[in-house]
Image (tube, rainbow, N blue to C red; front, side, top):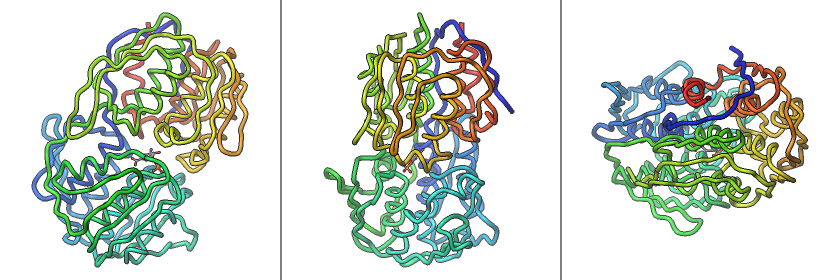
Length: 427
Ligand code: S3P
């Protein structure tokens, strides 16, 4: 399917976005290893999260829908059923990487795989620490990529310094550490999203944190609980940028997750002069959330680098679109991780946004964008990457003429309501 968009006048309205993808994955996974039931409200039912559910169901975890609530009935992974087929995580790095950590508590042998994109993404960053903890892991093709065969059980604690700032690697080690013996200590080079730590504590487990160290006691039991999943700030980011760059726009986005490890996008846009206000804040299951009010603003270029990068890593494609409409130069540095996401997001944004007329240049670890530029609508390629597809669609809504985004069905990976919400707010 290809999404076709045309230049819009403005966006006005009050909306809520789909549930947070990271918290949704974790609610199913932690519910899947906990005692008692976990009741999840506002779960994101996107392709990525469905893949996590499908994998866990094959292992004996029960996931049911009752009205709008998802009920998870889990058990410790050492009691999971054997499964002789391949566990397919589809496009989802979070699904496969966290599930590898979780499953390493089981002494059964399992095989994980994924789609074309996931099969090209680095897995050694996960298998190295899990092997150190005692899991037996082999790569079917001997290439450090999926498919992976894993047989765990009898895990021991490790002290591990993460070579890359990655919440997925950190979370995999936490999920394994909870099931092993001893105290696992993880050191992060930079703070990354901490939804796993928050939910483990909320499920009665204990994870201690000080500065960049995280400590997890082994042999912990988790107890399922009631979870409310706030709206995904990574999905809201597309609408926030659209409201900022389209004249006379005003948008209220309700109940968006505002965990400080995820709000780098708001900080970055504010440093560019964005009129964004948080008008209500609450905490549920340890996660901050609130309403975001956005008004059309004159943006100026900025530099985005250092420890803000992990706090906005998924928002860089849409930030590149914002920078195209900002006055002056925007430089994004230290973002080499973008090259190993669902696509090489630096290359994709530089080629596709460049085709539309943006002055955008690739650097070794990021990009430089010179604005403001007028964009022209044409045929662009999402490369099957959901965040690229949505960023290009937003750019298309500000471009002259029509823009066709090829392969836009991938949007359902993270934000199935994207088009429906846009229809409500475009005036
Ligand atoms: C995620 C962590 C990030 C992020 C991804 C979701 C998570 O990946 O890009 O979309 O839910 O833990 P890395 O841990 O690889 O940085």
